Image (cartoon, rainbow, N blue to C red):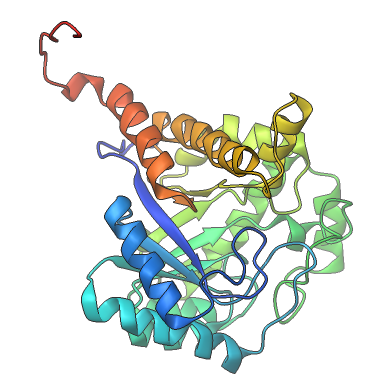
Length: 314
């Protein structure tokens, strides 16, 4: 853990994809009223933050033009803000989309390129005094890696030189994460983004092998030692589903059991994350993850629990 231990329960960030093609719920909340109803549902179930995204970043997805992305997310943000003061995160790597979303009422920018995809993003965040999630993006750092080739291109320009990319290919995943964050945090510092406004995301599921995903999740405490809160997204990620599949569980999302198993398994990962003091988890199914957070946070914060005698079960 960092020197500033997390003495609060892990917060839950509910996902609203205002897209026709997201990997898990694409098209379900594409219409404004559907997105607003989903926001109400997620808040009622215990989400203290909502992450609004207008461009899918799943493997095989397509680039969304800036104006189209703004038209998808801004009306949803404005509608939510009219009736709730819930924290709103805009999931985008484009500075113009972030600027429009912040003006509409968003509080935080969730940048999957870690400020490296659009050179103006850090300045937009700093000017607004907003919070920002800086994600480690292995797809950008290792574009030719087999696990990266299935993803779309992130960023307007190549974020790293050919020499840097060549060096990255020789690094372990831990070394790669360290180098990526060093460059991203330098960009944040140069733009004068306040340190207390920065969260780090280890980029689970983005161009990583199964082993690399597991290593980064196992070693979240090492990431905490950098002194920043962690924002973690593992909900319905492919490597979680792969583990279930290899163990003989039903994972077909077309079946009720398969769909439920994906959320149950994801909630187990949230439990492990909450036990390690992760500050925010980004999830699809708030209800199942909230249960995981409550139990794991209670164990982590055991010293602060009331010393009550429990009644006998009936």
